[in-house]
Every structure is written in structure tokens, then in C-alpha cells.
Length: 72
Image: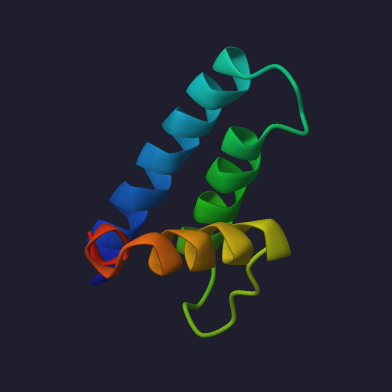
């Protein structure tokens, strides 16, 4: 991904974060955690990201249910 796409993605994620915070006022909600982790991922080097354990468990659960769902 080039720098312009990365900047666009970061801007989009920041807008989404505002929507998610309004829609899910509980600061412990999974939706807010997922949004925060995605925003963090577009803000740093892709090889330096350490995902939250809940996100890792969720991805593994999706992969365990269906490889096609995970790939999508």
C-alpha cells in the first residue's frame, strides 16, 4: 500500500472511530476494541503490530469455523 492509500485509510479509520464511539458507549465493547486496533494497525509499520489477545482469539475462532469466512 502506498503512502496516499495509507493516509486515506487512516483518515477513514478515524472517522469510523468517532462513529463507533458514539454507537458503542461502553469503553469495554468488542467493537471499540476492534476499531482501536485497526486504527493502530494503519498508523504503524505492519510488521510492528502486536494485536490484542481478544482480536487474535476472535480471528482464530472465525478460522476454526470456516476457512472461507476467515479468508473473506
